Image 1 (cartoon, helix red, strand yellow):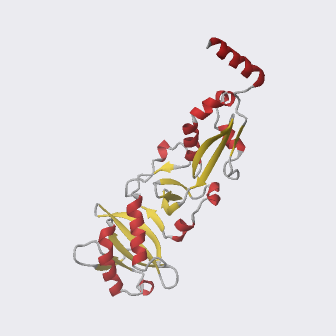
Image 2 (cartoon, rainbow, N blue to C red):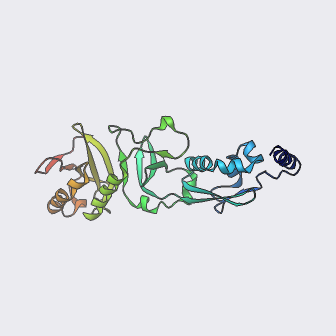
Length: 251
């Protein structure tokens, strides 16, 4: 065993047989060679089995900085292929003075990242922006930020149910943005509609629970079949049990 180890060390010293020969990606426009080689330590560059053993750490590092899912495969002696698939955000959120993309697993990243030109953001951009109030629990912990991709505490399934309700009620093209806020100490969701001239229109407040939306939403549609012509100074409150209140907005 000592002889074999010594022979291997001698061969490595002379012929560099354990060095990493290549790390590449089919998606070089996202992950260049400089990025891929930059994740490997000097020891891992000299000993490719060490890089292979630590491939999980390298994958996580890439996924912390780029909006992708990565996979590292060994394709030959000391040769690696790093494949990646761009993330698909479910919606766009405005919080902390910035716009964020959020996917169905709760990963969030800035909408201003240059790498976003490679992701599939069409679905998120087609939906009204979710405005997250500072009155609510912060959706992201930026104090523990390690990279560009953060793990949010958002209930993504619930939020997507809000959007599903908006679509079922036929309001998807009329809602300017969705505001997740607080009212009298409890979470509510306010739909801000577009007015007839494209400006701000009427506001409709719903309970945070999407299960309570549809029945009251149909009642609102019966009262106001065309939300774009409703007085923009009004807001409709559906959060009271068994009734709908229509009030003037306080300026």
